[in-house]
Image 1 (cartoon, rainbow, N blue to C red):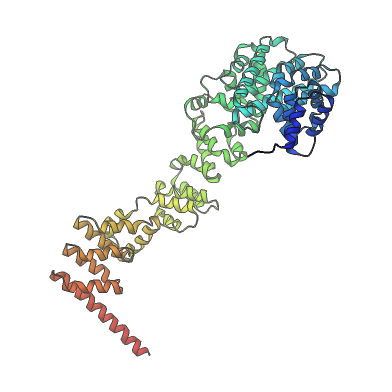
Image 2: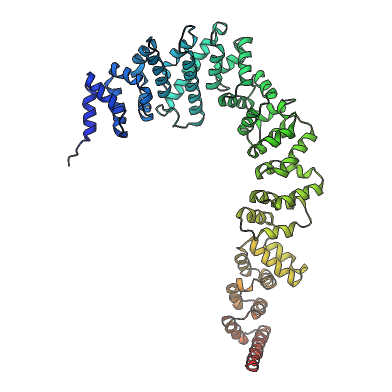
Length: 543
């Protein structure tokens, strides 16, 4: 069976083999047409054709290129090297700026060193555009490397990204060896801090090995700059073994709100290891000098992280208690959970008031948090409050109550029946069914237990807690139990909940070999007959 080639693909294959001005013009027009597929084919053809004149013209028209074309061009940076060098060297300002934009849009890191040279050139007319471009490339490289989001620098695979990152850091690091001679020293250091991480030599060098001036420039940036990559670097160092002293000093003294929120967002809920150790070294944290003012401004989403810091930072106990008490009063469920240990420290009356207020909170997760704390606080109305929440429609609250009532199971109830009144036993049976809908099945299995004593106890419990109708199949089977005492117990339990099926089964036992079984069966049948006659008489009288 033959297949017909796509005419457009055939046409672009022909264009790829021609280097004429006409072919170049057709490709340029195709790159700007409305057909997505045609634009994609045109971009791939430009790379195949390698015609420098058409590539230079494409660079000049960079503003009209779509993202897919730029993505295609990013896969073959070497094809654009000559044309980009030509464009950057031209005296035409428009062409130079187009080349810089093209490098940025296609993630062409092969030109990164060239841009750095332009940045260092005292007479470069494009200093501002070059500075913005190298920062954007560095930021994209960091974001893609951290998140592995393939929509960032989409034309580069993982291997290419790692290679570019290493090359960029090496290029920047080599320039800091002559830090005092750099005309854009702060920008070079900033780029290193954007791209690098705690383990990268380039970062370590600017923070510890390139002299006081370089270290001071890096510290200044880490103190004042709110670029996300720099804030990430600070939080990464906080969890790192032996971070440079200047980074800990920045974390200790920096107190702008954006930094604090970013740092807390990045921290885990329960710091451990090096992170916990480094937090314990942060004496007199600037952003915790007015802790109540801070916590009232912080978004609820970071309250649990704040508690993690408070637990490890060298703060006085009074401040810790005050902060945690505020959080368990006003935060969401995550913050309250993190600060729950303060309930054991504050006065019992205050803890009780906080929990009862939380039980009325419109946020179901907060109500569930309070529900899970009732038993631990040993409040006098704990059992009643838990039972109330077994009827809640919200799963998170109902499940919290069930979890807290886990010890109130069938076995526990059967052991305590002798201490309960008939009415209390019935209420406990209803509660057990809410806590564990599978309780009737468990009781049925207990009724079938091999030990006679266990069978008898289960049958008595079924009647006491109102489960006879729920376990009637098991009780009916016990009418044939080999032990007469078990048959008697089953007759008595079923006899108070007679149905035609049950009555028929019990009537057969009036012929049982055991005299006591016959006697109890006859008593049940007689009583049921008397009840039927009484009902019939009442019906006749009323009619």
